[in-house]
Amino acid sequence: MVTKEIVITKEYGADIIPYLVQSACHYDSTLHITDGSKNINMKSIMGMTILHLKKGSTFKLVAEGSDEAKAIEEIAVCFE
Picture 1 (cartoon, rainbow, N blue to C red):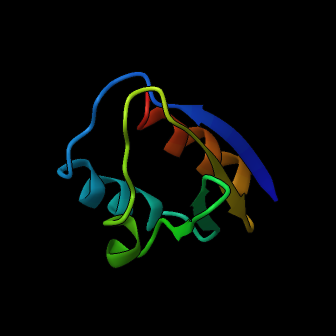
Picture 2: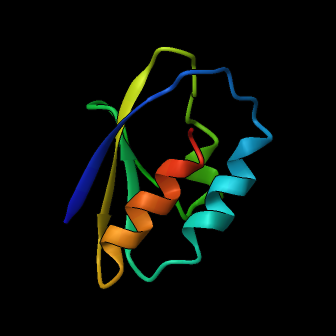
């Protein structure tokens, strides 16, 4: 399992959600976003709709599987 902390540095709208789900689906690994109170499957459009990407908030990306390191690094770029 690989984790990476992400700090949101700009405002995102709901239009980023389909892009994140599509990006996550390219990997064999399971990918989750967790903020302590929620654990969201990044490959689930329904799960991702409850994600609030507000400037200044932090969360962890969690990947587990055969391509976990690659998945974490490439998904993290989506937030930069």
